Each structure stands twice: as structure tokens, then as C-alpha cells.
Amino acid sequence: AALSKWLADFRAASPRRLRVAVIGGGLAGLSSGKYLSDAGHLPIVLEARDVLGGKVSAWRDADGDWVETGLHIFFGAYPNMMNLFQELGIEDRLQWKEHSMVFARPDRPGEFSRFDFPSWLPAPLNAFWAIAWNSDMLTWPEKIKFGLALVPMLLAGQKYIEAQDELSVKEWMRRNGVPDRVNDEIFIAMAKALDFIDPDKLSMTVVLTAINRFVNETNGSRMAFLDGNQPDRLCAPLKSHIEARGGEVRVGQRVQRIVLRPDGSVDHLRLVDGQRVEADVYVSAMPVDVVKLLLPGEWKAMPYFQQLQNLEGIPVINLQLWFDRKLRCENQLMFSRSPLLSVYADMSRTCREYYDPNRSMLELVFAPCSPVAGADRDWIAQTDEEIVAATMGELARVFPDEIAADGSKARLLKAAVVRTPRSVYAAVVGRNKYRPRQATPVPNFVLAGDYTMQRFLGSMEGAVLSGKLAAETVCRKLLAN
Ligand code: FAD
Image (cartoon, rainbow, N blue to C red):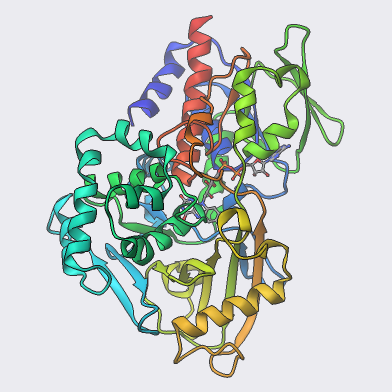
């Protein structure tokens, strides 16, 4: 909130309005455009595709149903995202659910285990209560051993959390005397939900970052769903906000080259269709894998840009399955605890726009889905039919009374499979130190994107914060000159 105010005050204080070209119309690019326009500048957001949102983009299929790039959950512990919703006046678009975490029980197919956070207790007591009252998943000795292992984090905070980046979740558990069962019962599901990879690969910093927010903020782990498709309900208000302040948001504008001046700073952008875009400052809000490809040769030897070679997006698949009947799902995000699947939700219950009283539409994250992330095969390269068949097999285990892999129970009406071969940066062991700050060594070039350095890892919150920090960087550079 303080940074939002600083940026808005900058508008009144600054004599100069800069023209800023923002490359990428995902959340980081749109957030950067929003805060630059709040600070009085003129952003031009250039999105390559014909839809805004990047990893939160969606489009309609032939029947008019929305197909999403990913199932997206908003946490109470997303302060910048919550501010953004308030600043845009769209807080009522978040549909908050009961404060619970619901896990499927592979030992008892068809049953679920809940961690309920009571609303009358503040943090961290509500988290301790939720863990104490759940007796399905962990024994008391396991809970105590895990609780003791968290003491250094509770005492030392962020410094301790960042130092754990050299350990995987599984290694950290073993070193701290936490039984493997805690990893198997809880953290396989958590790791897959947080970064689409298994806990023997995921950095412990990621899990501790989430736990730290969840135990310190009363509503930190409370979850909300957007009330409809992301382009209309979230990206469109951002676009309107930018345009109302004189900025522009253009789709179908793929940047092909960053053209430099003799001194190594950016002269202009060359788009695929031959257009040339000139600005005072340039913000890249592209995913790290694309940035690496577009870096001008002159910059490649700089250590700041070289570190990007250590970052890479992780593959993930999102599925939507439309059934002919209503399944017995909760109005919640569910952790599937199945080898192939991560989290899922019945969007016909959780999301107002997709509401259907008679039929369920499950949206599921299929992860890990490549050997790098821990999968037994490269699922991303399989056909839609193979991916849907494998998912139905897993769902038959989770809902044995309602779904059969051969389709003899609930009938699958249609399916949508969206592959993202390079999604959020893979937060495997030892990567945090390579995440770049938003200010680059090039005077008129700034980075935004969920992979850039900020406290919220690869997430919507991280993307929004990175855009805001990029806007702040532009303003501070102007003040310094
Ligand atoms: P992106 O969204 O990737 O945006 C980059 C944009 O740059 C894209 O629109 C792209 O088209 C554009 N671009 C690329 N190249 C060019 C070019 N040459 N010229 C112009 N434009 C270009 N996060 C959560 O917080 N909660 C969740 O529940 C959650 N679930 C997820 C589920 C899935 C399946 C996926 C894939 C992600 C999920 N995330 C979740 C992560 C979240 O979506 C991302 O962290 C966030 O949206 C990233 O935003 P970004 O702007 O940094 O990158």
C-alpha cells in the first residue's frame, strides 16, 4: 500500500512524463503499466498474443465455454494483489471460500481430510488449531517433530528461509529429523501445488515462504476464486485503468528484436510485423525463457544477464473436464494427492460465471508432467486423449462411486487440455540467487515478471509485485537523473 501511494504521489511531484514500452501483457506487464500510469507516465503495453493475461489468459471454445490456461487461486497472503483489486474497485470479484484445506485420502478413496482454520482465533493459533484437530493425516509425534523443525524459521524469519534454498524439501525434512511420512502425506501435494514439481526437487525456500505467511497472517491461507474468466474480470479493468490515464494496451504486437544504440542502451523495439516502437524507457515483462532468447548479443556477457541462464520455466498441463452430472465436490480447492494430479476444483460450484446446478466442470492441474519435474514420462508430449484417459483413471480413484475410468458412471461430455511447456520458473534447489532485480545495468531497460526478485516466488502475487517494483525503478531512475 505504501508503494502504491508513493507511485501515485510521484505523479504530482514529477515534472516529466516518460513514454514507457512494456513488453508482455501478462499480470506483471499489466501491473507495471497500471503503476506507471498512476505515477503519471505513458505506458504502451505490447502483448504478443491476441489475448491479455499470459498465464492467466483464457478464450472461448466453439460452444462459448471459457478455456483457461490455469486454475488460479488467490490467497489472503497476497497483499499486493489485494491492494490491486481495491485500487481497481473490483474486490467483490473475489469469491472467498471457507478457511480450510481439503486433501483427498488415497487410503480411503472417496473420502477427504480437512484442516479447518477457525475464524475466531488469530494467527498463528488458528493454524495450530487446524493441525491439532486433523487426526487423519499425521500422528502427534509427527506433528511435534515437524513443529520443532519450524522453530528456527519462526525465530529468524526471512533470513533463515532464504538460506534453505540449497536444500530440497525432502532433504530439509530428513536433516531436521522430520519423518518421511510428513513429506508423503502433506508435502508431495504442497510441492506440486506451489511449483508443479516433486518435493525431492523443490527448494525448501518455497515451502517455508508459504508456511511463514500462513502461520503469521490470520487469513494468509484462506483462498478465493475469481468470479469469472480472467481476461474479462481481471485483465480488462487493468487495461481500462491504463487507458483512462493516457496509456495504451495493444494485443497482437510481438516484439522480435531489441535494437540498441552504440552506447548499449535501447534505441527502439522491432515488432514481428515490421513496426518500430520508440520510448524513453523499456520494461520487459516477458517470461524468463523468452527474455533469454531476445537478449541482444551485446548484453549477453554481462553477469547480470548471464545469471538468467540458470532459470527455466517448468512444464505444466491444465485440464477442464465437463461431466453430464453434478459430482459430490466441495465448494473449495482440493488437493488430489494422486501421482499425476495436483489441485483441482469443481468450477461449476466455486466460480459464479461457470455456475451450473446440474453439471460439474472440473478444472485440474496435471503435475508433475515432465521428467525434470519428477514425472515418469514426458506427459506434455502425449496426445490430449492420453492425458484425459490418465486423468480419468486418477479421478476414478478419488471418486470411486461417481467416476469410472471407462466412462460407465459420470459421462465425460468434453475436455480441454492446455499445455504450458515453460510456465513459472522451476524453483529447484539453488535457483533463488539467480533471480534478477528489476533494475538492470542498462540505463533505460527494466525487468518485471514473476521470476524477478521479489518475496512471492512464481505466482500472481509475485507478478503483480514485480510490475509495481519495475514502475518504482523507472521513477527512481528519473529522480536520479
Ligand atoms: P506471463 O503470464 O507469462 O506473461 C508474459 C507475457 O509476455 C505473456 O502474455 C506473453 O504472451 C508475453 N510475451 C512473450 N513474448 C513476447 C514478445 N516477444 N512480445 C510481446 N509479448 C510477449 N499463481 C498463483 O498465484 N496462484 C495459482 O493458483 C496459480 N496457478 C497456476 C496454474 C497454472 C496451470 C499456471 C500455468 C500458472 C499458475 N500460477 C498461479 C502462476 C501465475 O499464473 C504466474 O506466476 C503469473 O501469471 C505470471 O505472470 P507474468 O506476467 O510474470 O508472466
